[in-house]
Amino acid sequence: MYPNDGFRELGRQECLRLLAKVPVGRVVHTRKALPAVLPVNFCLDGDGAVLLCTSAASELARAIDGAVVAFEADEVDAVQHAGWSVVVIGSAAVVTDPSEYGRLIRTGPHSWVPSPDEIFVRIKPELVTGRELIGGRSTYGVGLLP
Amino acid sequence: MYPNDGFRELGRQECLRLLAKVPVGRVVHTRKALPAVLPVNFCLDGDGAVLLCTSAASELARAIDGAVVAFEADEVDAVQHAGWSVVVIGSAAVVTDPSEYGRLIRTGPHSWVPSPDEIFVRIKPELVTGRELIGGRSTYGVGLLP
Image (cartoon, rainbow over all chains, first blue to last red; front, side, top):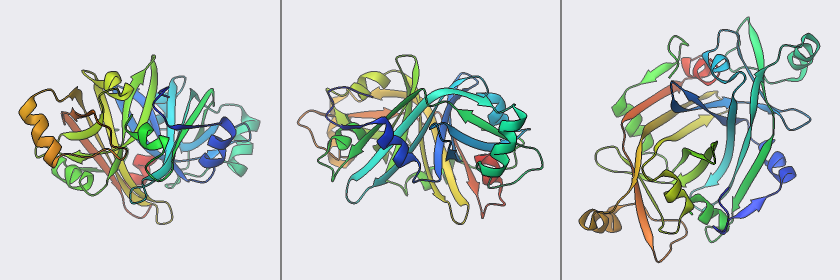
């Protein structure tokens, strides 16, 4: 977050409430020493962790397993110049615990392209920040373009 | 991009055509050694460069001036499981040439929250990649969750 740029900063619970409203966010990681961004569908776990479902053969899973990543979601109305953006930063890890895997098979996200070898990736919500724009004059407008 | 994960890769011109359709994307950079993601409105220059307009006092401008960043935009239909995502990777630089600045004042993007000290940031389209999902069964679905 950028201090003193006038946006309205959102609290952690407000951020998680907004995240729960949208089906798709973006995983930001590093690939071949370059920034990489990939939209993914997701759901939130009870503790606010971001849960992704992918294939065990996924290059994304290999790229982010054990790494600190950012997960961003937003809703922006370009006409009203209003919206919000939330970023979760934390370590990503493939779920390996069998009982946890079983729970997520029942309650977790499902890949838009189901595969026979689905795995889950959990992004720990170690840092949860967000900002809001209200009608262009807000702070999020400044946040959008500080 | 992740090879062999089955998504439909988009060509550079197709990527730029899609980018031109949307008003907002996300600047991905590094801040305090952590990934940072900030939604911004933008426009494309004739050469496919991403143009942002911000305040000279902007922490964003200071954070990305001279750095290699990613700029991502997408449109995803979560019901149809369809959409696209485009990522531009390149060096970002504050526009300092007076004639270029004058041109962008006339033709460039405008901040949603105008400031008296607007500057422009250009992101060179050094690497432009994109992927598409068509109705969930596509490759972009796999691209979403390889």
